[in-house]
Image (tube, rainbow, N blue to C red; front, side, top):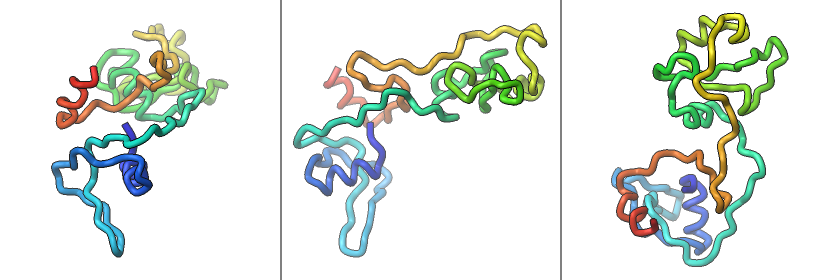
Length: 153
């Protein structure tokens, strides 16, 4: 999976070709060029995947890692909470951030979970990588990709 910008750059540089375009009819336009937004691409030659040692921590990444479930009550989560609050020296890291619902996040405020008598449903950790070095933390595949993904598996 790549961003739309990276997909267009791969196509313009001749490293990839579009196999299937997006259904919405979205296109990228310049003064002299119009390129339909690709949904599925085929690489025409090897492209090195940039490798990152550590996964950058983002709000959407924490929510995706925790399955959009509150680490305290299990309801639908829409915020990120620091287990050890930053006001008490907690870091902004994968190991200290969990997904939380607004109610639990407000109730917890800047207190420790031990002070409230709460427990974590899961212990936070950085997302893992598969054996190929690809991040497991990816977005859900589009339904249009199904024929391509089953053929590759």
